[in-house]
Image 1 (cartoon, one colour):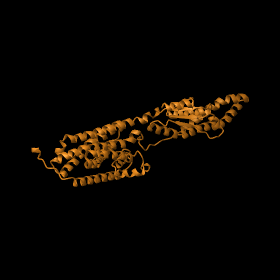
Image 2 (cartoon, helix red, strand yellow):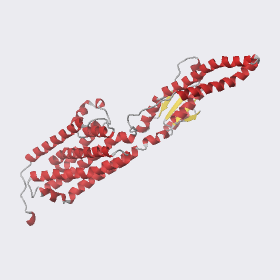
Image 3 (cartoon, one colour):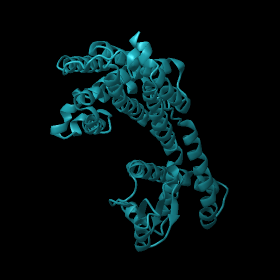
Image 4 (tube, helix red, strand yellow):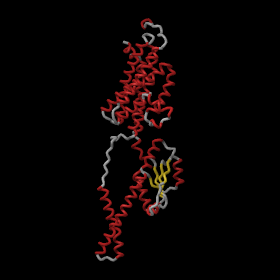
Length: 404
């Protein structure tokens, strides 16, 4: 049987091993690397520069420090800008002078933000997230301040009346009322906070970490790349066996080798991803079947240039991979893609594969539509390969293997 003979060829297993190595390397390095992003986002260097000497500026400054894991400083803006140029500071929030007075007078106030534009993409995204929370933090802090002021206005007359009923003079009432009012307001405000409980129900099951978000792209890219590299080996194997067997028999055996490679290699990448992300066995089974389909489709898709141009086909496959990475991995939404490139998502296996993988990982819904698109790309690729075989030059002279 030709398939059995071909599987005994060491070059076929070189292709399988290369596919395994690519998956282990990409999934292991990238997913593991991104798994630390959420844990270490607090290490982004945020400075709170308080230029206000009033109580509200201090209150807002301490609240920002607590909420953003930032550092409170009174360094000059010149020094902060220099630290940004030296990549020592990623974000600075400046509380301006007369902040407390402006709020007391009901004027519009602004907090100035200085961002380090030369920082890494992930850090820049986290900084944007921090700055987006500033209005909410500021509003909450000022609301608490106004609530305490209103409670003070309500409690003070009651305390003063109680002290007056005890026969104390007016001057003594003022002196003694202040600490009593402050203590009672603090107690009432504490009770209000205890009575208000916010319950958050997460729909993403804790899967909002960067490692989960990037996993579909890295896994599919690893499988695709492994199949693309394997095509060079399969073309050489095809050319070698075609000397002894018909081109149709040889091609059928090559497809059989692709099935063996898909079944054996993808279990390594999906298994490593399961170990890193700790997802369930049903998700593993779904992803494993999904990656087998992708491996078969991607290998035949990349086999077209290799069959047409032999070793030079790699120079076509690399641009196809890059275009697929831009249009098909979900890095950029389709509406944001350049007009001349957006069409490519319809022919690259990466687009439906990433969509299906994301749906499986996040349990976001059925994947049948994406698998149907992936299957169509695979069948079209097989059809093109059969046409190439049909018009392939005449078969070379047969050589009897026993007398070669």
